Image 1 (tube, one colour):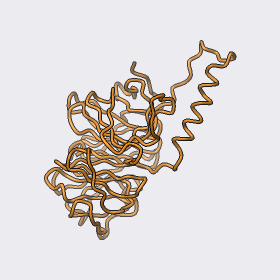
Image 2: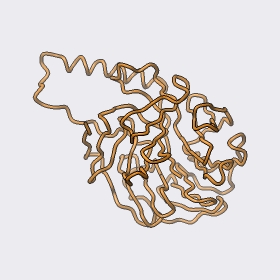
Image 3: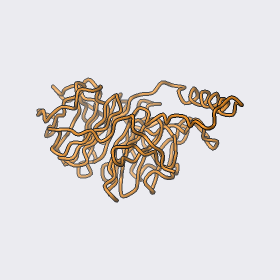
Image 4: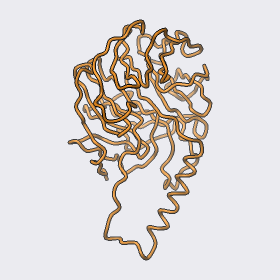
Length: 299
């Protein structure tokens, strides 16, 4: 399963971005503007999600400044779209779910909260499914017919049985990341940064997992198998959360933020420098796929 960790954003940030964008647009229309010198691309912004499109094996990254396709070590902005993309997860071939906030320069923006949005063309276009103006999902997790989302506005876990069109609000549970598996959809794991919580009733109630390390991200690529990223950059695995085995460690560049277990062997991760890493040996060794100085646009 594909999942991702989210770092909470400050209330009112979208409004601040809109104001900043207005200032930037005014500056761009100033007679003193040098139109012959293009502005430097701002890059991905802080990364909130990673995934692989099963249609073609392409790695995608979602951040504050758009969705990006990784190609040749570069992060290529999809469709020149700058929406703040959070709660990002790949659910099928060319099919993505996300949440977040519209681009500060989007003239069609109706709310600072996108709710749940869906793309069926690998992020080129998006349609609203539900909760526009209400939910800001910082984590999304599909598990078979179930879809879970952590809404930062209410601090609650939401659950849907119809692919996100309708929701049931469940436990109030502060968390950074979610994990579940299609074969065990009622079992939900929540990484809190201080430990691990477990629910066996679809997120209605949670209980602490004894002796679990402080985790910022967790995923369940196979039934009963958890792969996690600790606050100190260790990559850990566990069967059921009872004991943990250190598989490896992310390079010591920045604080760990994102983990996606494409399979038990193939892992994607990112840190606070927005460097994206890949492991093909269950986290024992890592290779940088992208470093933030290399960002281009896809028109």
